Image (cartoon, rainbow, N blue to C red; front, side, top):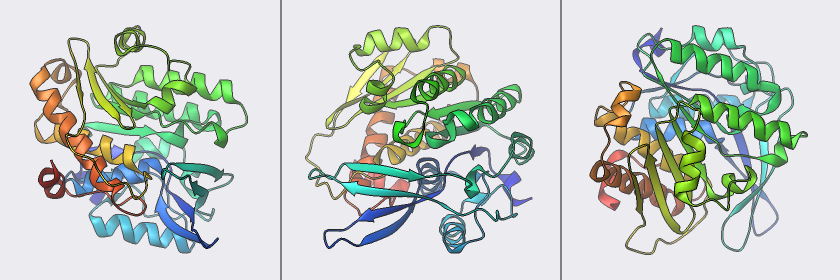
Length: 318
C-alpha cells in the first residue's frame, strides 16, 4: 500500500552494468535506463514508484536496498525467481559506453500489463517508460499500460533510449518505439536515438514537425552530447549549453539524469497536471527547465557509473 502515496510511476529495466576496467576486471554497477531515471527523480525530491518486479537473487536484493534506501517506493513486494538482467559495458577513449545485453527470462520483464496497472498509485499524475521496455516482445504490454495511464488522466513520458544491439528484429523495434513515442505527452530523444530512428539529418524544426504530427506529444527534449540540448513545444523552441567545461568521468546514465531533472522541474512548478499545462510553457520557463536538466546530467558525468544528483546539488551546480 505504500506505493499508493506517490503520483509518478515508472516501468522499465533494472539491470546491472558490468563495466570493463583498465585491468580487465568488470565492476558491477546497478543501473538500467528506467531504474536510473527512477532513482534520479527520487533524489530530486519527487516521490516515485517503480512498478517492475525485482529478482530474488543477490543483485535484486541490492536493487531493493538501493532504490528503497533513496526513498523509491516499490509497486510490488513480490520478488521474481528470474535473474537480474545484465549489460556488459565497454567505455571508449571519450568515456562513451558500448553495450552487450543479456535480457532473456529476467526479473524486470516478469510482470503482466494487468499487474502493472493494478500497481498504479491512486493519484497517478505521470507514467514514465522507455529504454529496453520497448523491445518488440514487450511492446504491447507497455502500450496497454500507457493507454491505461492516459485513460486515468495521467501524462505519459517516454525516453526512447534505443538499444538496437539488444534486439533481433531491428525494424520492428524501431517501429515499436515510434508507436510508443506517438502515445506519449513528453518524450526524450538523443542524437544517437535520432540516427537509429532515421531522423538524424532533420533540423530541430523538421524533427518537431514530424514528431508532433498525429501524436499526443506536447514536449520534446533533445540531447546532443556536447552540443546544446533543446526543448520544443508546439509553440516554441529553446536551446541551452553549459557556459563552462565539465570534466567527464563517464557518461553512463547522463541522459537518465537529464530527464529526471527535467521531470522534477516540471513537477515542482506544477506543470504535470494535464496536457494543457504543458501547452502553457513559455520560452523563459523552458530555458530554466533545460538548464536544470543539463546541470543534473553534468553532475552525473563527473561520477563513476550512474549516481544521480539531488535537487540541491543540481541547483548548486547550475
